[in-house]
Image (cartoon, helix red, strand yellow):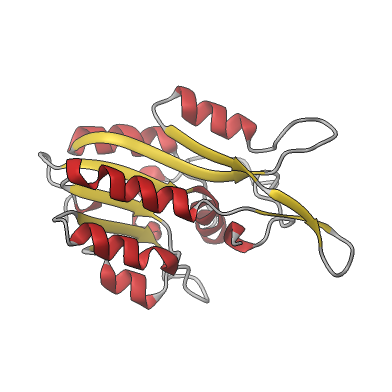
Length: 200
């Protein structure tokens, strides 16, 4: 298979569910080299845009998010950033947590851009995107899904994997876009205070 299931003349876009990809890569034990991901996709296809979606935990006391350095780097290095502030709440044990979902934003951008695309590459295992994938496929867009089934439980559900035209396990991309020599994660970007996958 060609890189990400793409042909060199495919007009394509990348859609990254930031929280989901982070959780998947962390579970597999490596970081993503976003610079290599972008440059290799540009070399192997006609890349139109690369989107990165994330909810951001803002510290009200410091007006700072631990995700800010990553978001700024991606923004300055070729990615289109789509962010929103996560809502703060207190759980039943009195612990401060955050909730925020970017599912609608990703689905809307996928649909909006679909008339200009031959292919879409979506980094997520979130089954909620299955219907949006089906909708753009009906318009002639081939869809590659990147996640993993090498974890227990799998990060990508069977329904969304079956819907995609191509499914690529993130493990199989590690040698290309796994960040080499990355220091051990301190997990300060997507804290456990966030609800899993920022679901509403």
